[in-house]
Image 1 (cartoon, rainbow, N blue to C red):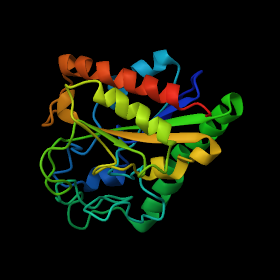
Image 2 (image 1 turned 180 degrees about the horizontal axis):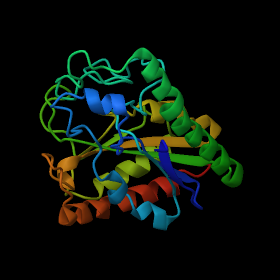
Image 3 (image 1 turned 45 degrees about the vertical axis):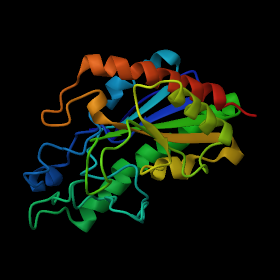
Image 4 (image 1 turned 60 degrees about the vertical axis):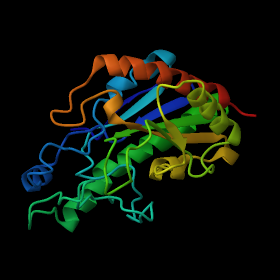
Length: 263
């Protein structure tokens, strides 16, 4: 299994989808706990939800492997990104705190080093190569990192998560004009709650590659899953909800494109 699927586009925009993968390595497949067997922390259906970006002309990068193998949105040194509860490069617990692996079944250090070399590194090399290509061709590059999560996870956040969670690493990953443009799109609608740099400020991808001084703007969008799918197994897609949500997502991406050019 290749570590990712990549489709180049014509716009200066790369859409990264690191957590939609469900592929497992043999040792992870054999070692998962019963609670983890259904891959509950997957960003289900995100490639389908954002399929419209291909028609806009964006490049699209989708990870194939489950985050239970290796988390593509964590730093390679596994340093925590949040002071509150979180999961690491090699998640030992689910978002709800349950063990990811059955006792004694965690992959070995050597196996995990292989995941880093064969899955994590190629994904990030592709991001770097595409951003460099876009910047060389257009003079600037835009990175939109697309995620989703269950709307209520007490271990990670209190109460229900806002529907749209925009992260810009507290303003460090993009110019202020970009953030203001995204805020304007969110404020112009009343169907979905939203926040900027709330619980989710952006993971490693946003923080590592967002370099506004170098004309690379990056944002992360974490969506509450109940707005386009069922949050309980089998995590079914809900077309009516998804279509309604896309009426906000498409303008949001379009505003990112419009605001992301060189000032």
